Structure formats: structure tokens, C-alpha cells
Image (cartoon, rainbow, N blue to C red):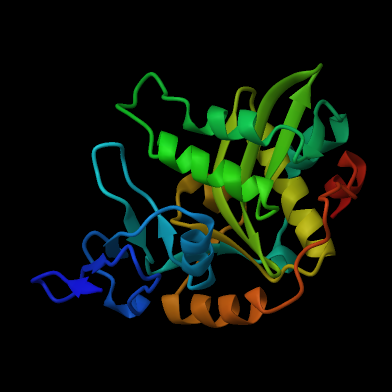
Length: 244
């Protein structure tokens, strides 16, 4: 590893998978830790075990982040709002796991009309497709009358799930995906869902912020636990989810 002249940002040696301590991350921009490396499964698994994730645009090198505070969801503390309960009870949507991972990631990376680009580059897409083939990355799909109308994807290590992105084409579809994910992970003994960086949508879904130190302590314990069951199968119905 080679540090830049500011003494914090690290240039990674492609020949050696090694990340600097996360507390060396920049405060502005919040959490930027290192540059370089690659997106092979070995690099990604090493990063996520440390709570580090890639996030960059097409015109940038690979950038690695560990922000503080960290946005997380605790499944055993998750509560569903009244309006979302009504949506779940109506049973408008069908929810599946790992049925259409590639379609979900493509939908998440679709450029919106008011955006200049997407952080899910071709390289990122291909990397997470490979992680899915290896059983590390998973998707939640929400369907209505056979059409994919919402979903999300992320990585799982031990009993921790790292959320990456979500999308919706109909109102509440991504929220329905998230509820079913949280309830299933709670059933499997997941102590923590990493949401990386907070925003109002995540806050509305029960996400909270914790310090990097607290996050890393929970992460270290969680990734050492036995992995989630394979293949992923949904155990929650809309009716059951709405009651919890």
C-alpha cells in the first residue's frame, strides 16, 4: 500500500489484498479510504468483512469507503408503519428471492431522467453478478401480474446482509421488498443489515445511524457466524409480515 501525500488516502497495491484501518478514512468526503485494487470476489469479500465497500463512477478509479456514522437496520427492532401494513395486507404484490438477480441489478443501475449517470458501472454489475453466481449476492424481487415492479440486492457474509441498491416502478414496491427481506433475515438470526449511507427513504424504513466503532464491533461478530441457509427461500407471507 502507498499513502498519498495527505497522509490518509491510500493507493492499493493490486498484487496484494490489504486495506488500511478504516479510522484513516477521510472526513471530507466522509469515509473515502482508498483507491485502486479490483472487484474480484477475493477483493470484495475482504473489503466487506471489514465494512468497506466500493462506490465510484465510470470516469473514476475504484474508490473504497467506510463512512461514519454508518446507516444500519436492526431486524429485531424493525417496525412497520400503518400505511405499509395496509399495502401488505392487500396482497397486491408477489415477492421472491434470487429469481431475477440480473434484472434487479439492471433496474437499479438504470439512469433516471434527472441523473447524469449511475454508480453501478459495467464493472460493478459484472462483479456482483459473479458474486451472485458464487452464492454471496442475493436479490429480492417484487412482482405484479408477472411484471417486475421493484426489488433490491446486496451481499451476505456470515449473518450480516449488506444492502447495495433498490428500485421501484410502482409505489411502495421497494418498501415491500425491504420488509420481506428484514423479516426473513430476522428469522435466520441476522443481527444487522448494513445500509451504508443514510437517506430519508432508509430512515422511513427504520434505519438508524451508529458510529464506525460500534458498527465494526457488530460486524466482526456477525460475519463469524454460520452463513444464511442456501438457497434463499421466502418464509414470510404478506399477511404474516403485516402482523409483525
